[in-house]
Length: 285
Image (cartoon, rainbow, N blue to C red; front, side):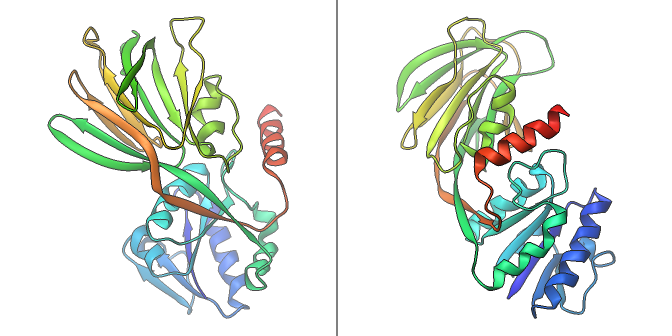
């Protein structure tokens, strides 16, 4: 078996855990794909080094990402494009999408007796039309359409399946997957959604209305967002907290369920709500 090992380069502990995982898995006759940037810090006679994350994932049977949610989500999108399963090892503050804690590395033995399950998570396909250009991206957590640095509300029009449904005056709108319901949307007052569900969640950010609440759309919905004609403030589209684009009048954002899915390996028996309670209690303490 060839396993991609990708730690967060900014976390010393993640690099340390990567070496520990390689040492553990070497006993199971594994080979490893590792990004070239770790050729001096994550060493093994069984490792091959590749120029970027995409090539590292491509040359593997499964992926182990070591870091916080941001790292795991970033790698999971490469894994989804290449149809590779992924396992997240938490080395961050929360780790909602991680399945293992560093103390549970011995559970990796389950990879070889097939005593694990795979959770299929939906992604969003996001098309940003801006400045006479088009970008198509994928979101595992969320897409945020929000104001810039000036502390004024923006006004956004929302269409569902090409039909106008509402105009929002708010700091912005969050469109999230069920996986992303425990991220920014939760902080903005949105509901927690079981990650195996298939739907699109809309949560307004600080809306200027007592009646603007989160809305769930079915997974076959297409949602379009436009700056309202009266809106003159800066508006930015951010995908999974990584990619950001400024949009103006006559620009638009289209959001729908992607055909791609992220397949997360699950080695322990913790259910989603137990993990949620554990993580939130950790943050509270």
